[in-house]
Length: 185
Image 1 (tube, one colour):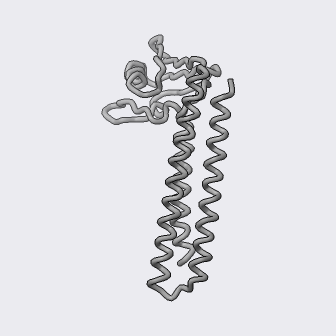
Image 2 (cartoon, helix red, strand yellow):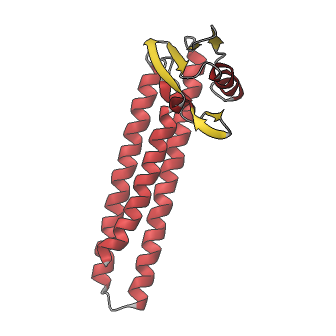
Image 3 (cartoon, rainbow, N blue to C red):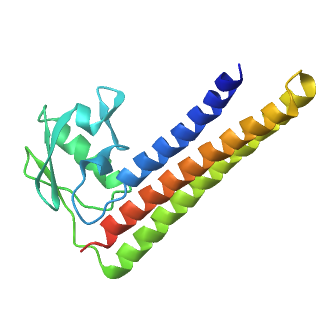
């Protein structure tokens, strides 16, 4: 029963970390990354659908994404969806293909992106620490309401702390890697 309770909190921490990773993937670092399109939905016969499900998305060059819709009538729809999104790149189309050309990032923009990455990382760490607090609160309640000894509670709290430390370390590593990628010209 004890480990099940800790697994629940570990699962929440894993979700927080996975969420951070997906957020970091959408931040463009000067190179073309098809993941910047992940959050964009297009109207496909009345259903909001990810671009990857209505077109072939490729990266023919380091700073270009090419989108080839499977249906010719989707070109305009995809183009409108990209323009309405927060990608910040104007698509060009030749009637069959849509191209997104990523401009070289300025030094100032790179520093802004690194700040954004660090902010997202801090938010993830705060979320992990809140999960730790919730775990410790539930362990204290468990100690008052059952025949679990104080030593067992202490041991479980130490496991929660160790789990928290590991996730914070992973978050720091992810932030560092993404920051390095952004600052690499």
